[in-house]
Image (cartoon, rainbow, N blue to C red; front, top):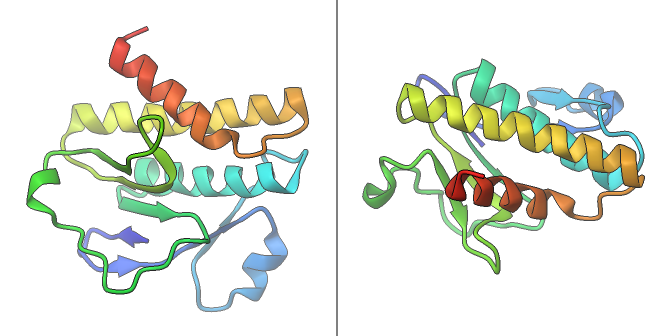
Length: 154
């Protein structure tokens, strides 16, 4: 879900297959073949690639969920307690669950940090996919590794 500069919400599809994008008529679609060793890694790469492009290049606020997430009522974007937060995530055993994340433009310095985080997350996912030939849900552990290193400044 992407909130455009017109403050309207838009749904985008992220996939590792150009064929899926071709079949998804009427729905904006991103695809990438950057992580090519396993289907799971391909799907994760497509998701993070779309996130990074929409946030960094498109200037959009982005909310992403796994495919197994359902909402029973409309999503509330404007939560007063989180207005100054650039990254909002669901708590998990580690700091963030990568299955439900929001990235918002708050101010220029925060945007640079979030842009770097998204680019680094995609890069690390690509490296793990190439080196191990698998990813198996590594997106969450990689995201938490980056967030922890930013928090500890290591």
